Amino acid sequence: MSSVQDTSAGAATAPVSSFLTRAVLVAAMLVATLLVAGYAGGRFGLLLLIGLGFGIVLEGFRFGFAGPWRALITKRDPRGTLAQLLSIGLVALVAFPVLNGAGGTMIGAHAPIGFAMIAGAFVFGAAMQVVMGCGSGTLVNAGSGNPVSLLALPFFALGSFAGAYHLLWWTNLGTLPVIVFEGMSGLAITLGLLAAVAVGLLAMAAPGTRAIPRRLWIAAALLAGLAVLNLLVAGQPWGVVYGLGLWAAKGASAFGADLSASAFWSTPGNVERVTESLLTDVTSLTNLGIIGGAFLVAVWRSGLGQGLPDLPARAWIATVIAGFLLGYSSRLAFGCNVGAFFSGISTGSLHGWSWFVAAFGGAFVGVWLRPRLGLEGRK
Amino acid sequence: MRTRRLTAGLTMLLLFGLLLFDQVQSGGLNRFDAPPLIAWGSGQAAGGAHCAALPR
Image (cartoon, rainbow over all chains, first blue to last red; front, side, top):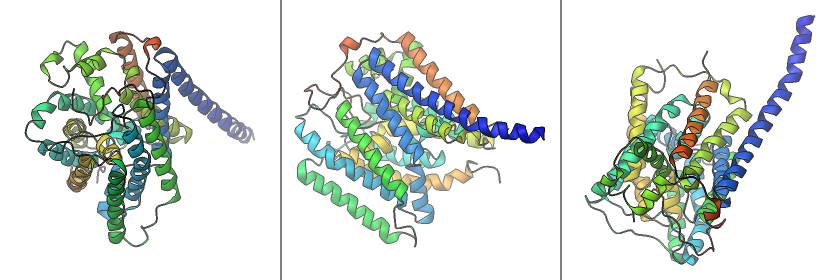
């Protein structure tokens, strides 16, 4: 009898405790945003809030980049990739006129195509399939307690720092001029290309995988809204890897590394970034927000009770290497799935398209490598 | 059995560590030096600290 009473008391207190946990977490996130706004400035508080939104949408709706590409390759299931294209198209609809009217005060994710850029995107595509986490995905997964992403994240940051350190050496191997689609004609070309890819994907899709689920429609629209807000508030599109490299650069600088030897880190803009607080850096703030938002959703769903995977040693070693490669290659590629693919294409940069093709090629290698490196658990 | 509580907690710990380190190492914050709330329409040039930007 007493055990029945205990159980019912437990059942009654569980929802209360869960509600309290959620309320405390939401309040903590809002307080953090207000503190950043109060101490660093309103724009920076707003960017942290946008980052939290990214994390909540990506984790809450399970909107990703690496997983959908894997589904496309292994099952001919294009639904997640179609949602990505939809979201990019929605951002483009706003970003093109905004950038066109900004008179050069706002920047798109515009970068040159080059040998290192293409190779970097290929390696990134492979590495993101190995650890099943892209730029944003690694942050989201780490926030929701995925141990592979948690281990990959610091090496991602180190790789991003090192890739930026050597960036100009790599770009000197050969790059084209920056090619950008601009104005209404540029928007028409971009939307036309997105539609063409979507039609191609639908044509090769396996039966029953042609309709985008409601969850992904909503996520694509919300993600696009947040990306547009990011552009309007920051004056630059959503990005991830610059911030991660900056975290490592600050660490290296604190431990006495001479950053003046790097053509990248010694430029006045980057010296200022390394000196100033991360709470005034656009991509650092959205990155912190993504991790925090994903954590919030994971706690909200009571999703942290999941057991950790039993992976062999070679899987953890592969994670460290792939994490470093994610960072290094994304700097050579002028961005990851966010900075190059999502923001590059949605702001008219041809390098975004080139990145897409090269990274998708690399993804085939990554899909093949992942089980061989033990990342799908012990057999 | 170890769960994601451990790893998610570690992630949060790392994040707080990073912010603490940053506050100790960086020049401090000055909200009176902050840019306008929204870049769009402010006439102020974007910083360019983005992964697609070549160093200037």
